Length: 253
Image (cartoon, rainbow, N blue to C red; front, top):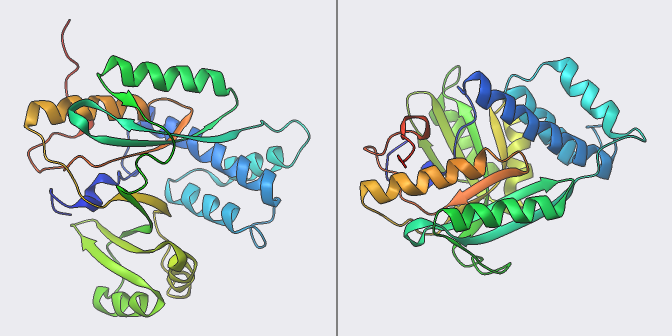
């Protein structure tokens, strides 16, 4: 995937170290819980739960963990999570959208506001970034074991709009309304995505100098480390020379 691609703002969850993997599992568990509470514990009749389980498998979550989480979610002692989102501008005027699942709204609001203030950002009102992002279906597929050209033709017929590839991963995008048909086609082809979902894709990305971009990535990583935050989207142009988050040193005080 090229360094300047807007699709590169979508962060892969594979290959995380143990600490990151634990946080990824926490976020997936929350999604399974809220999906099962809203639509029941049968993935055959609950599309959101089916997708959450698919993503859990893609992140290598043990089957026992998945089944235990579903059982807990449909029980009387299930955690009660709320879905809330935040929109605003981070360092360098970069647009940032955070989607949250929380059992304590006041805690999450305070935490997110503190993060924006700490990094010189500013929270906006809901809907303030609606024109800057489109909701798209995004599938991250391990780039092996199939004829890419044949698969792409099949997926185009199902509604896929764009394909980007690097050595390891094929990223497939589609319109939000075609997400189900593309996901079904992948199933028919025997291809299980490492990750799939509706993502907020920036219509345009914004380029900053390297030091400013590092500040933005520290801010983004801080938000992603918050257990209440499920997904963080932004419109920073990710360039090849920008280090991965884990390689960006914290500022000295």
